Image (tube, rainbow, N blue to C red; front, side, top):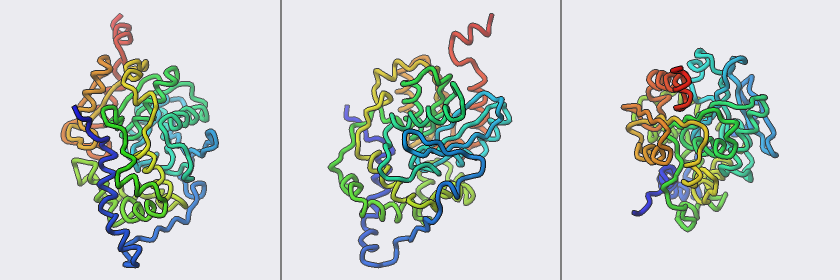
Length: 342
């Protein structure tokens, strides 16, 4: 059976092919290209209370929402999101007693904007470990959404003693996807900074189009409110943000990752208990991908959220928060369940 392309790579191709024509207009001086006002530095613009950690030469921003005595839960965001785009989920978790740590994986949010950073899953997993080290947290429950599911799973596979429990939400793992085609028109465009940066400025970082792009990830289009979109776009004012996003896209779309989380045999050996939460109407990482992951890990539990797509925590916050609370309140595995019955 022919493998289907990685869903986020396919969306990236759609994102870039249309603006290729617009770049020609930009070069010709048509004025379509939106000038980006990247005049802020991460340290000057980051939310108060957050911290920067130097993890093997890369600056990683994270926020500790507390409470200090709570059980640690690490939130790992998806593509184009950051530690500030969990919205009502953070207070809901805090009210339930969790110590919520939210990280910005480079190049997103307020983390490092240098284009020569290592964006592999292995490197991102080390950054998750480094953030927990920085906060003095020995182990935590880890929740990874979309693109963030890959680094979260990589972390759990490589350092299972640090991960008490895994929750993957509409995770973009690409386990059944073929290797990226570096000879494709998208990859040839992404290979050149002088071309990929205008492409992203004209598309993903264009305020005139970013709302439409975000709506492409959700089933409930009304979930993309002006207030939420503004929060997603907040880090776009940082110096180098557009160039960093374009460099990450080149690595993501055109370079094969070799992490353990890409190896089905390695995934079968996952030690921390796993829960899967998935939007029933997700077209980016369809429900079939969750069922495939569950076939590799039959002890995992899958809960499907009706009527939502790829970003459940903004499409139906109340339902998602209640489902996550129920999931986290239940025993993680059979051993815990049996212990609770005694």
